[in-house]
Length: 92
Image (cartoon, rainbow, N blue to C red; front, side):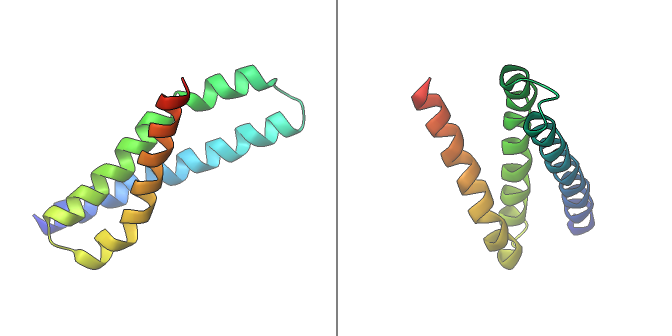
């Protein structure tokens, strides 16, 4: 069970790193005026929910598997993503 949790966590972290690089490239294109703000937002907004699910899934898995230190390391990021999503829902 522990190996499966860590393999899934590794794959999820790789996907989140890829997603962060995609965000940086897209924002760089916006800064250089290769794309307009509307298309940049439409490209990035569709990846907010998967990012939230990825961080929250790893955090909950670490809590369930009783890896407290790793859980406490992931908790601020998951909390920030949930807070950001709640703000986005309130502002809509």
